[in-house]
Length: 501
Ligand code: F6P
Image 1 (tube, rainbow, N blue to C red):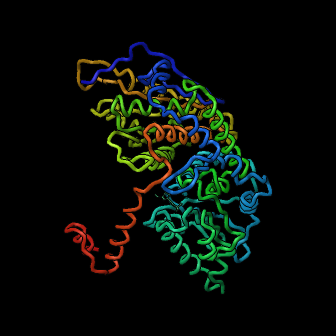
Image 2: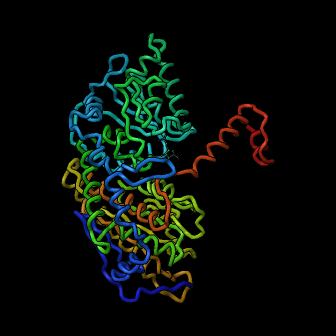
Image 3: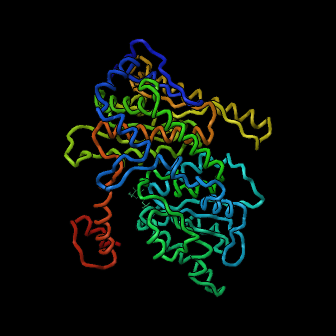
């Protein structure tokens, strides 16, 4: 049975504005981190980091620069403050001043998008919705629809009124089939209600749709009027775009001020990444430890285990951010790579995971590493003191369980009885916040962006393209044609299933 002892447990922590990164349970000491950095950081690291932070880093395969960091400042959708088109649209929607075709205020906003046009906005909206300060008598509800099967529309359309519903079509390319399959159904739903009222598609476009894309021409061609378009630079990658106009649904959920605070938190992490020494630099520590676990400890996966429910979408978001960036076996110059690169990222909400997959983590065969994400204190003045006291006790319970399980994963629990033996020896890190705020949320997300960038540099990858998603789309067009009756043959299994439809 695997047995790994921590020689002499250390307390290795670094902090930034109330965020503690604790890497005590990793198998790299502060001294070893420095030598590992010397060994593994490329000679051009500093230049590459500066290029990323100034928006001049090159994404060669897509022939563009990488500028998502600028969306916290120079490219910010709020750089003109209240005069920003983004801010005006949000305020008009949240105050009930945006009227539908029949003159009623919009009450429901449906963000239709997928991948980076869904995961980041969904995660941030879920995490930060309680911080909205611009409370109006009028309330808008923001819903998220992404899956091509229409699964979410089955749930959302029945609770919305076409006369008071607005769709945000969020798509950088403005061409993703998943998104437009949902838009087509939404359009049928809307027009079916409008026709008896003597209304038509032009009313849909004028009052009930906002396009968010890097491709203004396609939004024009689709029929979305310019006042209802938000355009962001092509140089902002989809999975890095929640800070851009793609974050419209975050702002419609949480208000402009919270969105701005989230950007500010990310910007402070950018500054930290730019200036902190490697053994105090949170993104660099995360990156180097991840490379060490991948290469030296041959751990091929990373579990994201949030212990505060507001972070429960974080694992799904980081799956795209990490695996679509560094899940590659070809280099920045398109040469084959024959050694490990980005890990498989998985995870789930920690407290509930204790009743689902923690058995495997504690007594299973496989190696894993994990990032625990913990919030120490939570207050919410919407509740009475009495209820707040009870809720605070629950937060303490979650903290206790997080600390207990990460200890058990690290140190194990020895027993000669196999079923009572916990081998331990699993390296994990902890990201702990004193309290969740929009700023600390933005900082954590930015830390992961920079971690993934540093790992891509170390592994010699281009972390900003995603060629591996294209072939599947091509094959799906053929199977979709076959399902519509075209006589196409694939393989006996696929052909048999198609015949069954
Ligand atoms: O999965 C491929 C991908 O291009 C992602 O990188 C992107 O976030 C998603 O599809 C959605 O793309 P778009 O925002 O262009 O609709």
